[in-house]
Image (cartoon, rainbow, N blue to C red):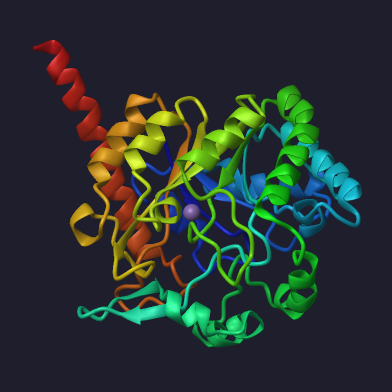
Length: 360
Ligand SMILES: [Mn+2]
């Protein structure tokens, strides 16, 4: 396991990268060219400069989150071939720059959905929350307006204003796209990019849908063990792998996270670890990373990752907003740093505990 921290890049992240380098155990950042639109080419010069920014703080780039996939590829329409070509060229540039893990998602229109970005908890901290009833009663085109006042002036990944401006067109694009079509389009895309991934040993790590069910009637496919295994089998190459995001997969109460981890041995290339607290039905709110604060048993999750020999980057995913910090919802410094420290502790304890047993 390699402990990392998400960093949105100079000029985008409100957290200075030197603060990230001061978190115990963090050796690398998970970053992106945040200003790039889906489908746009990344040049080696731009990647070099991103690497230099990380290196100046003593950090490496442990992986990219994300190289976004253009909606024409997802919907299997329009300029899909052109955008796949660009994606291949971007992967080539990343490979040449010695970057070997790329997280991406295949969610139509919305990268992720919450109905409240700052739900106050009794202790005064705030968390992001999801209420299905609100989604059902919100016009998707108004969804952005309903949350944009809560972003503390930050641009949230997946909810860029220019993307929201064309939301009507995006919904039209997916009108006749079934879950089966979406799955086939994903397989088509993966088959096209596997040669370049093999050449440069780039591990593609698809992020599960967040939440793990359909929202606004849009198709969703990376939602449970069955679908994920189906994808692993459809393109049976180690470079076709997963980002194990506990909070996303875990938003479906039926998903048994340690079991899913064990079923994906060798195919988990990146882990996002966070906790959520279940409410009624599909509703949940995010929580501190600590097991007792939410609904997940973090010890069992870490144990399963160690058992399957997972050795990729891990990052503490969304945290609460605490200590009056103002930042991008979910992406404050303080609670994610606490999360990293806690996860480091779990890792050390599980590994040393196993060794102790073997020595007895
Ligand atoms: Mn995640």
